Image (cartoon, rainbow, N blue to C red; front, side, top):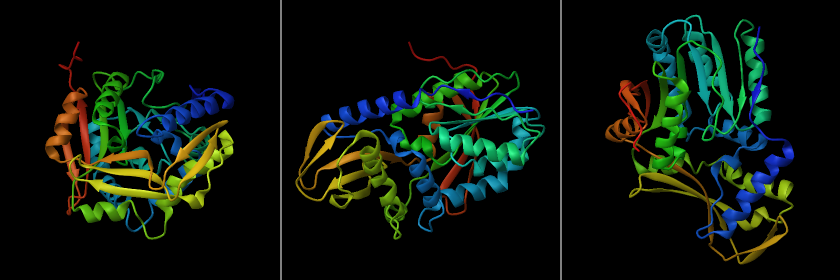
Length: 326
């Protein structure tokens, strides 16, 4: 029998108020920025699933290939009867590879900020795995997450190089929170995009079909719909490029002309060429992954990559000697 649904989300009006506050603060700041988590409304989540299928976007198919090849080994390392906790669960396609490989899996707990997307994912998993206890958690995994109600060893899963969307300090904070949630016996399977030819990176975030651009500009649609904004989508463009100094992809929406926009009853002026930051995607090398893991209270037990070394799947184990700095 499936367990009850755990929720930490606010009512719809409270969610919209959080969105309003974040947008107004972000557009009032300098430089302007809106947190990436607000890209993932229902349409944004669906567009991201489309991005994952694009030929330029190697990340998903490469990570999936590694997981297909190594899921059995991950299952052996995790052991029987563990609880699988997925941070930032999207469509949970990759998680099925682990669900199938983990012996006598006791519980699957996906965590996602998009309740609609999460509920659809949970319904599909309950249909396809009727004997599996599924307890979705609607929450921002960067904030408080309730304890997972299960005594078994916990295996965290953070795929898709989502860790790269976090600033280094945020990535460390996430890993420390995950370390606490997963416990001293816990482990974490982490997907990490590796540093590589800048053109390959550029193409992955500027696809020829324009799906990534639609994903970025969907944020404007959401503001128009939920905050009574007046963004003219034809007056803004998606912009993404690799910053080699910082080792990251930077993503913005850019104003194509001088214009004024009303958002939540306030007027915001945009100069031609002005950008609003929406997302970073940090890329790592082996030394960077090791340093990040140690800062978050984990040790690298195993790393798997593809032959071209585009992507890495890393098995982290909790460092029992770790204590957070005062």
